Amino acid sequence: MLSTPDGRYFVVNGQLWRCTNPALDEATRQRWVNDLMDARRAVKAAKAANDAQQLKAARQRVHHAKVALGERGPVWWSDGSPDFNRRQVANTPYASWFETHPDT
Image (cartoon, rainbow, N blue to C red; front, side, top):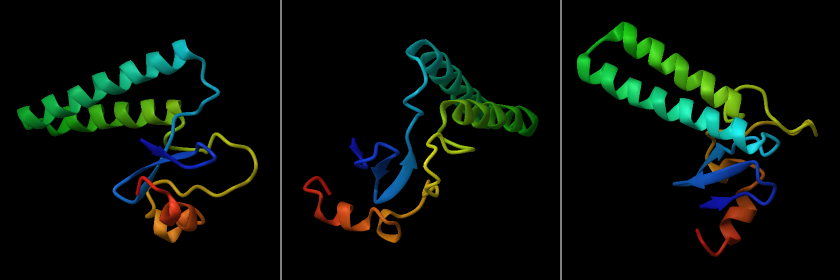
């Protein structure tokens, strides 16, 4: 996986995705990852059942876990840098780094 030099994002198909907060201790991180995976399975099940209410609740669980992991919501860094989550890397300050990276 290709990550930005500052460790804030990883890149998939030219798009930045915010990494998990590295300050989380392993047990906390793993608990939230487990919750996230359970919630994603619940999304799949709700879609298969065509149950809009369950789907909404499952998606809220996904969002809650991602916020707890630092992948959504307030940024986990404190230097005042803006968030470029879900942006095309070419349209961010990481563009020149990405263009010259050998794995792109």
